[in-house]
Image 1 (spheres, rainbow, N blue to C red):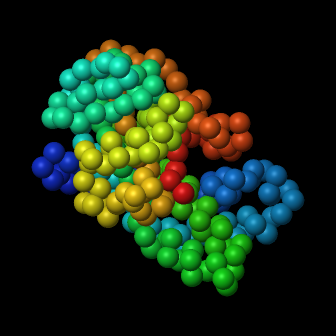
Image 2 (tube, rainbow, N blue to C red):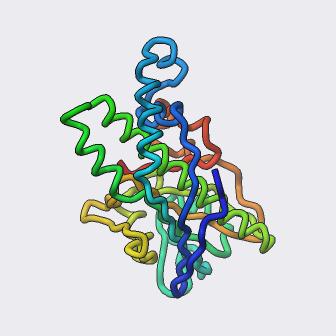
Length: 247
């Protein structure tokens, strides 16, 4: 991955563009919920389809991320109040961001074009359409990880530590609570990202998260430990910055 994207600023928002994401066929297969080693042994044709999805999918994505940093005002009763009037609430927030002096709210998307191509291919070639969809999941995952690393590097230059990334949908921070809290404070429209009435991000292949920032170290942990799919997910041991994906 390349962690030096084009950086643009709009008021208090930072936008990160032109990411180069390294997605291979194995990541596509994991994005489909498959074990690459098993697939290579039993159904090698699917590996070829996954590689085809990498080749075309890489031309269809438009990775973009936006983030904004807020100072923490107070923490009480499972609610983290932010300077300026925003808040984050839930047991997971209390557990992992109690030491935060600041929080960075992040959203990222790979855009609409790949989803449109999946819809076009589904009635024609379902196997390939599913591979393209798996590529989209892998690309959104990689983009979220890259955005986290970018912010962690910025924090390190300011002698700050960062928490593990927390995503709406993890145990202790429901999607219908966390997503609106993030999008009330982030202008996702600056990167073509919106939230619908069901708290689902549009485009679907998008991620959102929050990182705590502090001069003190945070307790260690992984988002995977708080994911309802942790017993079956094939991603959790392949990316140190695993994120939940919408869709």
